[in-house]
Length: 114
Image 1 (tube, rainbow, N blue to C red):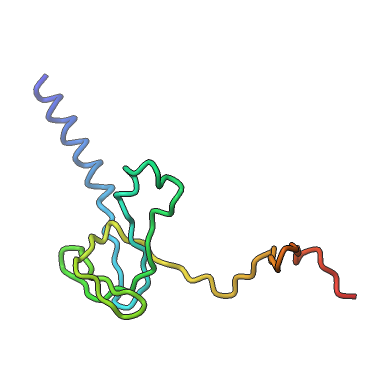
Image 2 (cartoon, rainbow, N blue to C red; image 1 turned 45 degrees about the horizontal axis):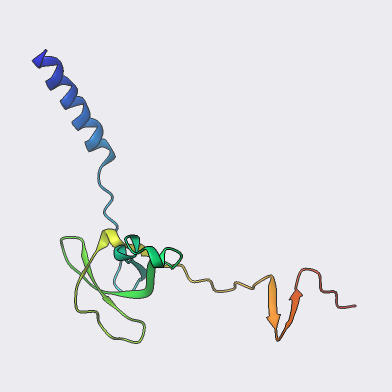
């Protein structure tokens, strides 16, 4: 019985070690978003975005923590865990399908210029 338990535990450990822990790696100057975990517990903010930013990576620490910098150059005091960061993707070249101008709504896909 004891051998079966030890064998099962060893098998579970091997499966766990195979998956590994994903440690995100960010470069200095890269744009990232910061996850605000406190919003998970706040009922009134359930429809608010839980990701704040973008921020720039200012400094990297060896333990997976990063010091962030705002786009205007101000540096945040406390380092942030890399697990709470995700890469920010700019939306350059994005054009909305619907443009609101005053009180009229124009759908760009249906406008004809004859």
